[in-house]
Each structure stands twice: as structure tokens, then as C-alpha cells.
Image 1 (cartoon, rainbow over the protein chains, first blue to last red):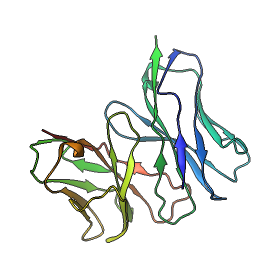
Image 2 (image 1 turned 90 degrees about the horizontal axis):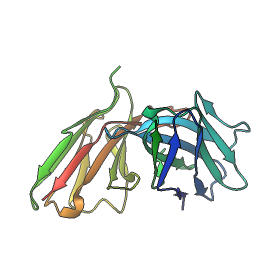
Image 3 (image 1 turned 30 degrees about the vertical axis):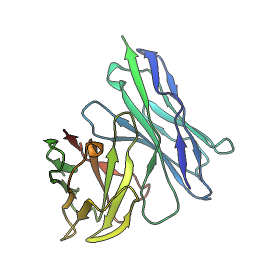
Length: 115
Length: 115
């Protein structure tokens, strides 16, 4: 069975600073994908970044980077130069090898960016 | 190209009533997913369709829940004899058949409140 653990219910960060949101995962699959989504108060889940289990380099998308440590089964999200608009819920998710493409989500971290 | 749309966005109902939610996926996305998200939790997988075929149902999907995608385009999720525990956000997502990373494209959700 697959499992995603996010141990930080809430985080604060000062505007323009960097912040790391933690995510650990558990799976017996050899091939899998890891995702981060942002959910603002409007409710929509916004895709941020993806990391494949066989990707050797950490994924980056603009101000978002994924710190992938396969041996530790961690996939932390780093947001650089935080902006007020980054205040939201952040969810880590994974997809296994089955053909369904369904994602399993963690419980999320609420990020508040202080001006 | 429009995104995933869900209707209604908000629904308040009394316990015991039936409710139906509709999801219109991104055109030509042949896979469609329903998730449920309760307050303070991550989305939980309910079911998914490939075209009109319902290929997987979670144990969370009790016999009071039924989902359809009759023509392989829009989908409906019906909850019969609603209970207060059904209060949640119901999220719909879609994905094209050949998806490189497998990111799901989510709608803004339908929030259900059962009184």
C-alpha cells in the first residue's frame, strides 16, 4: 500500500524568504511519481511540480523545487522568495505503477506568508 | 481550452435527501476521477472512469453513492439518503489518455453541507 506523510500541519514564512515543506512516502513500487499541489481557499487543486522515481535530477519549476531523496523516501517542496499569494494548503501526492493513474494524497500543510 | 468544471459549487441539503454533482472534464481527456475531501484532510480517491467504463471504486464509495459517465464525456456523482458524514468537498479531475507525468487536472470542487 502507498502512503504519504506530511508532518507539518501549518508553517509560517516571511515574505521573500524560502520555505521547505516536508513530505515522506512509502511504497513497494519500483517506479512511481511524486507530485505537489497547491490548494488556495477557492478550492481548486493546482499542480506545481512532478518528480519521477527514476529522475536523477531534482525537479524545478520556477520558484518551486523538489528535494528528492530516494533512499530516505522524502520529496520535500522548496519555495524560494515566498510571496503573499503563496499562502495556501500544499499537498504532496504519489502515483504508483498501476494503470489507474490515481493519486494518493497526504494530509497537507497550511502555509501562511507574513508581509 | 476550458478547464474542468463542476456544478453546483455549493449545495446545502437536509439529511436524507438525494444530491447530484456534475463534472465536465477537459475535452478529449478520457480519464475522469472523483475525490472526496473533508475539512483539514487531503483528497481521498473515490472512483475513476476511462471513457464510459468505471474501472475502479474505493471502499469509501458506499452503496448510497453512484457515479456515471454515460457517453464518456461529463460525469455525475449521486449521493442518496445523505448523511451528515457526507459533508465534504467533492473534487473531479481529468487526464488525457497518454499522460507523460500523470498530473491530474482538477476542478474547483462541489462543496456539500448536510444539515
